Length: 205
Image (cartoon, rainbow, N blue to C red; front, side, top):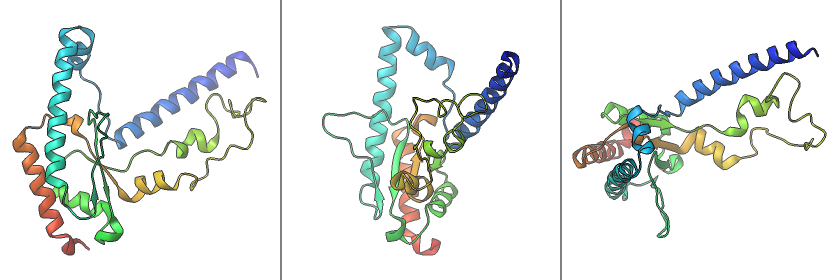
């Protein structure tokens, strides 16, 4: 292949990959970091101190949320070990749809109707992205999977990651705390919305 043609194909594939990434980013609810956040991180030590304060505030909000939701049937909350911390960019939830008899998507719609925003259903399963399914990362001829040094029996078929796939398709809800500055009153309203939905699950089934 002529070098100019190879470069052209590479640019085209790069543009396609960027467009796919933008669409996937929108699906998982990831937001662009604002200039203020960049400034916080780029001006130590004041920026680092402010960042720690913001993370601490979010952690406190997450703890209040967890306390308010902990007794809801069929809802699994994040587990944080004693020697670990969590910044709660996303507050992860897992719903036991079999036990509740209601689909995750219906629960999300009900919560949104009660005013809860920033809920994401599932997340991207990396192995199911086009790059892995087609085994083409650069160019149009299967690189790097076509390298002699690469394993030839790599399989990305749907079903190889059953736990991750079930979370994405049926049971995972991500509350995107990164989108909000949540006060104690905000958290209490969110808890009330969850409780109202759970009290009326029979009407959703």
